[in-house]
Picture: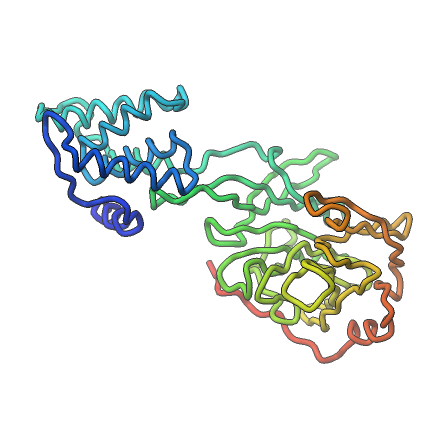
Length: 364
């Protein structure tokens, strides 16, 4: 396991050298120059100083370049490292210094240092209430589905940048109180699932994901909702909905119509809003909602108000630097879409030439 991690680190982190010349009394010029180069390269990649010191200390520690490790751990402890983390880095620094000085090591000599370093890159748990995205309720109000964002760093690959990952959760309403919060494993680790929306009969959950098997960056998927609120296997909606770019923000509307945003189809601007009819596991053809809804800018989501008969479009048409919501007239009866070619859209939404939902490559 240790050799595997060493090889992975050295392969993925090509900026590190496997064998660094070390002088027991003083770091030589070549090694110092290498350290500076490593530091500058990581700085250009957008790392903070604390992250750089941590990563360079850890990778040198794992590959047993103890003098380099001690050098970077000293820098780390002199930086803004969290007080709760200081003890573990002081311990690693002491061990590295003892190995460099050739002293015998008794205390902590048999510690699982590999596991200790891996622990630095585990994702810290956070409260569900923080960083919540959209919330979708089942028709009976029993279940709530929502996505939560977190910064995650891969467990292996010390220099991997932290990325925002969205994960789906389910909560259950029991006697008026929300409980039984559960993370829904609909994607492999380190891939996102967000923008949940529930079908009108409560049997299906639609969401956007960038998991392997997607046609573009983000695709729209569907999973059956089981009686206990858990999900079946996620299925990609296929090329009738998804494109080679981003397809996201699904919203389930009237007449089994699924609305979504896409920048991979012919439209009026960047992201346009589209509609497709869903009948069980059958799909109609996707159609653009037209210029009464879409603009030359990005129109990224649509939500409906059953009380007023209006729809609210999230868009940046008023300012390229910010999003706002605008209200449009959007009757939710026989004609779920307001278009010049309204009859053509209705024909498309009731088109019998449909395609079954395709299974993704994810099957755990």
